[in-house]
Image (cartoon, rainbow, N blue to C red; front, side):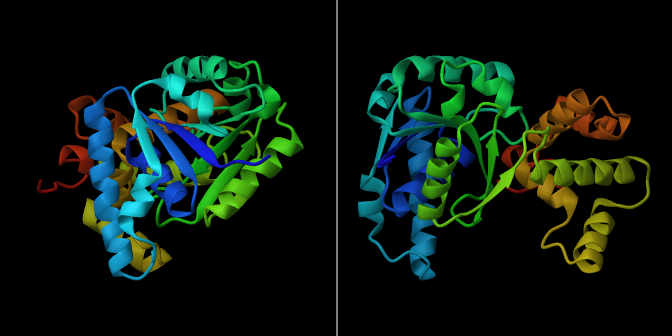
Length: 283
């Protein structure tokens, strides 16, 4: 499969990051979102990110040339030109369902559909389309331009040809693809999110302050940042959504979301993006 143009639905943190990484490595990109204001914000973020990467010598190509490879649109019909379509919308099954059903009708029959889901069953998502053999998970890490890992997840019907083609795209993007089987949370979030959830329990039960919990994990376990700081970066709503998927998928109480995590999400304390999570952040 000769994949030259990548379509991405969702221009948020993940979708915009995927678009930047793809354009930086020579792909043409079609970036879609529901409103022009979302797309404009995403391009502004990419512009700043590329400027920093160029300044540090990590990107050598002209910033304007990279951004010229990205076409923004609010019309999914543009994806008729895509050779690979990646869904990168909210981690919510119903939202993803709406996007994938629409994409399946627009993209050409030979085109692969991929989801950037961080926890939802690839087999279940693939069944929404008429091309389960040409569907798989392509889970990028945040921030996409800096993180090299991509989890590749095959559904029960994903063909080896599809897997090989997507692996090739990931490698061309400078990523290290790792295959994971289709279980809730895959590898990364099966391990990471329960750790964050347990840190929230430790805070709720008064085992330690947020600073103490994070310091123990940084200095004692050599983590680059503590789990509560990381949760604020990811978004507490996203962490809760993934815990819900794990809890529902395994029916095991060890995956029960921490009540404090749920309460904070209910209060709108979602982390960095709202200015308050386990820590407070200045605008």
